[in-house]
Image (cartoon, rainbow over all chains, first blue to last red; front, side, top):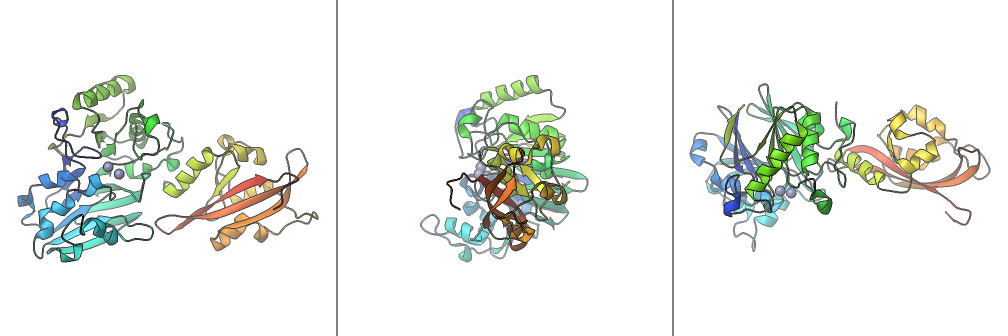
Length: 277
Length: 134
Ligand SMILES: [Zn+2]
Ligand SMILES: [Zn+2]
């Protein structure tokens, strides 16, 4: 399976020069094997997808973690939605009393957007999921709610023997940077367990986190502990804070490598980079 | 190993921050977590006991009414919440660790998360002072 980072920035897109090394587009990751492609989140990164690669595929699947703007902002301008009869599947969490469709409708309706969902020319299928397991082609997908404001899912995606876990927005412990000792008490743990690749929220430094408690994002300490405890093989720090310039992200990564000596690889997710698993 | 649902994890995170005793149980009544103030009621530390099966922790209390009659379990708020999946409240008398009887109020509520599955219940204990009317 291959995976490609199309958008790695958190919160809002940026064109600043200081963000161009790791990318200014918001969350979007594409997974592919020989027959199928999955799109994780629809931040502005989705607009950088190469649609030629989809020309011969029978359907398009977009898996949303949640509906915060930085994860759906690119959706309304995603060309396949306007292609007549193309089968497009959107998967994501519903609300407690409102459906996923009605939540998406708020965005796809005037005055925010001129075209309502029901008038989209594509053949749209909306799948509301919660703590679920399902398959799309050769991908086996497990989802679970994780701690973040509003209904938010993390994804564990298995293809053959390989596992990628994607949790872009996550505050596993609110108000403390030490996770509970027992794994079952750690939000998102079972999704991450022994994953080959973990793509995870890394919004705040250890020093900044105390002033951002409850904002729904991880500190460096959170993500490092989670990755180590879950025994992942490779960690991609993701959802880069738009307040942090790229050289600051690099300095932080250097500090992590020096101070922690983690038994797995740690990399900064970089827009445009593709990897094979 | 299946992890706890986030509504249970968040209940624990909240209980950790509260000064009232809080117990968190699974749908069968097994004790998943109790916070520091609750340790005083049980006379045990969560760090030492970890989770406790319902058969073990329920026998630590002998709840009685004002006249000293033993209360049947189905009259206890947490038992009601577990069987009906509804909030419940009640007061009764228990013996403290130093042998004194004292009145306690309990409010229990069910935990039903976004996936609409009943994953457990929370019970908050409140020690009544002499003046408190319940
Ligand atoms: Zn986000
Ligand atoms: Zn978010």
